[in-house]
Image (cartoon, rainbow, N blue to C red; front, side, top):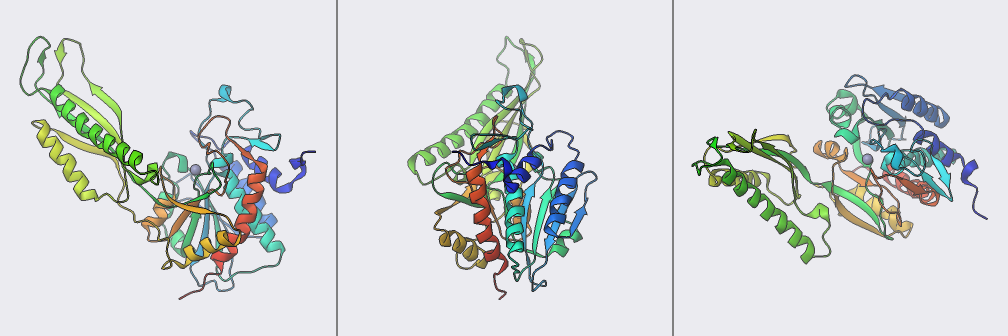
Length: 401
Ligand code: ZN
């Protein structure tokens, strides 16, 4: 007979969180805050709510450590989820249906289950009467799915964040389809840019000089050559993953008014994700050079230009890493280190010089973030709680120098 998860308190906790429609756009976070305040009072933890940007609340629960002056451990998760195409779902995305040991719901992988696993692990550790050296903060942040600028991005700049005295942070990663668990210690830098190609406008029957069609072709060729290089690299070395190479995608093309008129300008936009090995200045110089090679008066602009953020060290020099890895070793769980392919709130933390790891501790689980029918096996969720029961004490007991 199948296990009856309907009565499992931690499962119900997760399902209740999933039923809150904290879905973009224009999220009202009030219901999330009510839910989380309830969780905190059950745990007996004090709550602070910060609002560095109006209507974008950040809720922090705090479990004070035995040596509260030591830098703290931050367990971060985001409350928001991406939109759904409701008609494409087998089960309604905000009802958290439990079918044959699987929970279906928007955000179950990304990343409400992670937030609830932190809560459940802390609940169990507290109920055993345990205390740890370092203070543990659980933060629940808004708007990660729209870049996090108004959430964690603003929060890290505040005095309130500074007062949390964070020494190490955990945040989301990705589920792993195989037996290994994946931990992410770095992210690529996102550059969203547009190249503007001006030229001589005129009649479409002529071969006028200073032609923007020729210019934009040169630029697109250069970027697509770079794209091919990355594809070749991935193909040549099976140990590489998408996060290890620079990705290039042409995302927008604009220009023109009528089919027999050469326009005054054409523009092309690219989504670039720079591998952590890329020198940003050299990379931009290369683009500058391409623009001058393409012809007269080309320019470029950035919609987003992330700075270089160094990876979190995964060697003996980082005691938090040693503790984290030790917990996985103790549980005999295989762990692989990766660079995250997209962006998470960890980049704001790392930018502050604070070590941060991203993990969504589900193995044998197909990553389904942002997909329809997003789902999670209850077994993976329950296993995840036991993993945090090992990881959290290890991190919170890391000794000071
Ligand atoms: Zn996420």
